[in-house]
Image 1: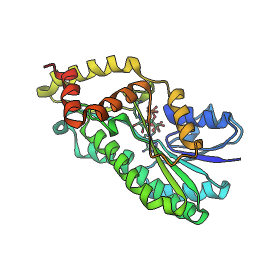
Image 2 (image 1 turned 90 degrees about the horizontal axis):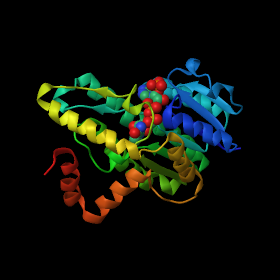
Image 3 (image 1 turned 90 degrees about the vertical axis):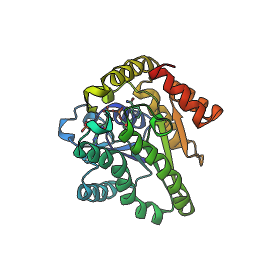
Length: 267
Ligand SMILES: NC(=O)c1ccc[n+]([C@@H]2O[C@H](COP(=O)([O-])OP(=O)(O)OC[C@H]3O[C@@H](n4cnc5c(N)ncnc54)[C@H](OP(=O)(O)O)[C@@H]3O)[C@@H](O)[C@H]2O)c1
């Protein structure tokens, strides 16, 4: 039986992925900040809950050790993350640091903790949830984009570094997903000078979210990335994300940027 280790499995995509892999007969180590609150995954056979906050270096080391004592691990799914939206000058240093710490450094730390094990084993796969926001940019999401673009570039570099040891690394880059992301999980900043821009942005995002995927649809892409045996880095997931990325590749960065900006700010 194969095993997947998942971060941020308490809700949204992480939880849907835990349920899908469980259904497909995998052993699942579902990690989350507060496993004592979880009532659904805790009922499932072959699903083990472990506590993990990806911003806590020491907890990462002890949880990875615990997980490896429980079973061999085939796949690490770095999924924990949240959105930070707002004009840069409205954000506090602690908001900025927390976003980088969770979305970018969290993935790097968890990956680093598993590399020696995968290298010894000469096999293993890392999959990280990035975002279409790691391949294109929206207004007012600069720090979120810094984390997700960061992860895309980091993963591309890591593929060169890890492939010679039989280890693979992939990104799943979803468009909108109907989860807690735009509700409970979102952190924001505001400043009156930017309010018109903020209103336009959220107006456009609401329209775009009509095309959003369900977490289950994106979990299917994670499953594909986990099982297709391909040495493919990037899995753009969801019809909205595919359309945006296709257009960006077709017309190039500058034309895309100008077209995309008009959606928010008109001619
Ligand atoms: N929803 C979208 O439109 C969308 C689009 C593209 C990419 N994504 C990405 O998809 C991933 C999953 O998000 P989602 O949409 O499923 O939203 P979600 O339902 O809010 O799930 C986010 C998960 O991340 C966890 N998390 C946050 N900070 C953490 C930390 N410090 N340590 C460990 N876990 C932490 C949350 O745990 P708690 O329950 O403890 O808060 C939760 O389980 C994120 O990386 C997000 O950036 C989302």
